[in-house]
Amino acid sequence: MREKIVAGNWKMNTSIQEGKHLAEDILSGLDRVPEGVTLIVAPPFTHLFPIACLIGARKNPGLAAQNCADRNNGAFTGEVSSSMLASVPCQYVILGHSERRQYYGETNQILLDKIKLALDGGLRPIFCVGEVLSKRESNLHFQIVSSQLREVLCQLDPDEFRKVIVAYEPVWAIGTGKTATSGQAQEMHAFIRAFLAESFGELAESTPILYGGSCKPSNAAEIFAQRDVDGGLIGGASLKADDFLAIAGSFARP
Image 1 (cartoon, rainbow, N blue to C red):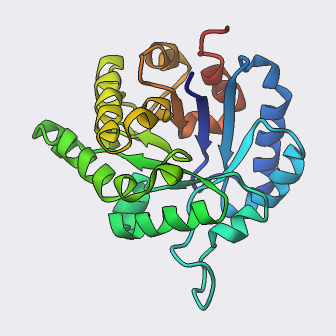
Image 2: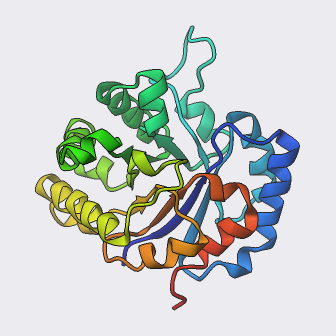
């Protein structure tokens, strides 16, 4: 059975104190999370260590960074390496988010370098793929996503790939209030799994693929019920503990 994962990407939001309160509210509501569902929180860099201290020895939720450098160390002012993140300790790192591609020019080669370093540093990458509205309207969405997969994940060896979590983000549904239908989500998730199977065979069947596009309590259950959807990469709704926990609770209880 594939992992069920609900990850919250806080982006550039909350002060440290606000972030700690949010984390405390999530921790206090863990009894609302069905057995077998893994929560992950991804606060800003400044919040990672204090929130790691709050989480302590708990295995759930896991802690993720929102990005890492494509270098291990050196004179790279303002960058944070995967080994630094692992020392927090973080267990995960989000890579390839559409905002990193769009605003900071991250290419597939840069992302491949980052994934390799993250894996070497002991982190599990949450690798994001997805298309903008113009590409979907031009019926190029499968082409865009397959290119992102081919140039990054398909360059890994099987032992590296088995540690990766994939997140599909229809970029046109991020922060817009628009959401892919459950059918659209399933269609793309099934495509991703089949495409990865061409390189990795049965490993692709066990790869978690998360949906990341305006997922909220009102639509999470329908989306998560799809065969190839294994959870969500949650943006705005992860900034409210009740909403985040409700989304995690949308998985059918065993």
